[in-house]
Length: 168
Image 1 (cartoon, rainbow, N blue to C red):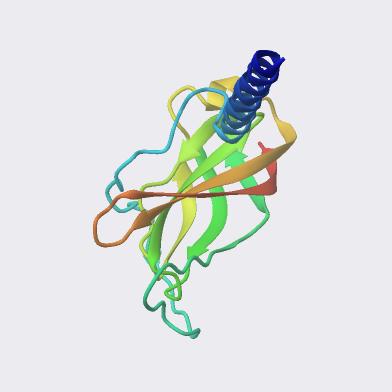
Image 2: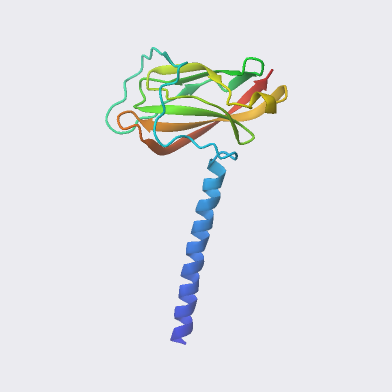
């Protein structure tokens, strides 16, 4: 009888581990872009469209500080192959960031690094993205990955912000 209790206990332990593993895989699959275009592990070069942004808030200090500001709409011009956005990494943040624009889980544009105190208003579409889009309005999102400003290492933290995207 003692053996059947141990077997049952072992089976429950194995079942709990398998459930936790399945849950972790499911959550990971939901957070990753569907097309497999992952953010880089190391901070890329500064985005060529990043411009200084004056910020009157308190500067970031010791430890992690993530702040961002964005407009919840974006406009894609298929003819020029660009996306008009408003995305700011205020100086109060002490993390650089990279933005990916997604529609239906597919990455259509990606910024270079936005250091704290910069903003970007235009992104280039990834090759082939303009051809895959029809004119209209879409639910989309910004997937934001954060990078240590000193080491360039990508943080485990990511943010996804829902936006409305108009394709012209």
